[in-house]
Amino acid sequence: MNHGRLDAPILILGAPRSGTTWLAKIIDSHPDVLYRHEPDETRPGPSPLTPAALPGLLAAWVADRGARTVAKRPFFAKSWQSAPARGMRTLLATAAGAASRLPAPVSLLARLPIPDLATRPAARLALKSVAWAEGAAVLAQTLPASRTIFILRHPCGQVASVMRGNRLRRFDLRTPGTDMPFDEAQALAHAAMFGVDAGAFQALPEAARYAWSWRAFNEPAYDALAARGNVHVVLYEALCASPEALARRILQFAGLDWNRQTAAFVAGSTTHRGSAGYYAIFRDAAAAAETWRKTMTPEDQAAVRSVVAVSPLARFWPDVAA
View 1 (tube, rainbow, N blue to C red):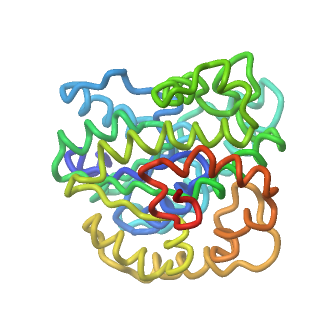
View 2 (view 1 turned 135 degrees about the vertical axis):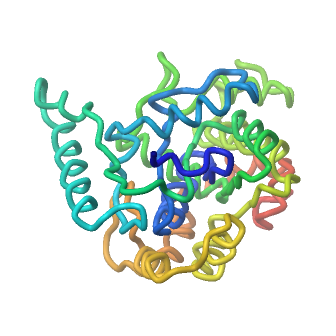
């Protein structure tokens, strides 16, 4: 019942550590939205994705009510859900999150579905992914009423954040046998297109290899999406600098009205003072966008720029472009 409009989903897409979760929660804060967090992580789509397979995939993602997909905080009041139902769902999501951190068999409780407890269908469906670039192009082409918001982050900022997360062991390694938390095969293949073979790639400084991952994700995605009328590209740094103005523009693009709940979330999530956890959404946004300039070594910054300076996307950041 609560699928929202499968012909007009809102997709939030970006490379890992590019501000996708914060941006997705801005969308989720709208009362009419039903949100699914990275459903492709638990239910990967077929590759290649065909237009005929898209409706079934979207329906499967909406039907996924596992804790990883539906229990991402914060939770918001919804027009399609009663207040008591929201309280019950919050309780269930909190319990599932706590269970996931405990040993088996208690941890198995986290696998139980968490119902949406909707009283009527949600008006809009929103999805977030940090991997579904290929599918996003099919979505934008197949469903003209869909809206994709593609976020780009300064390569040094994104690489610094990923390197920090890897040091803190915050990631599941995607490539067995390596210590790199990204799709190393994808990065290797992209680098090879520019004359960097496997041996040369492995000899690069760590930050440079991460920079190739940044290029491998963002360049093909931008090429496939940016020119489409139902795709909006936003820079993370611009969103941090002018959060309300850009959030208003993003919601308007998505066909959502500006509302008090979203206004409160945008204000609260950008003016936090004090320490913030690695996956925290509430932080000092302006400071977060520039933290890498103080924490990333000059050598690592130079390594990233040596890779990204010739990228067509470098033009978005004057300090990166060659």
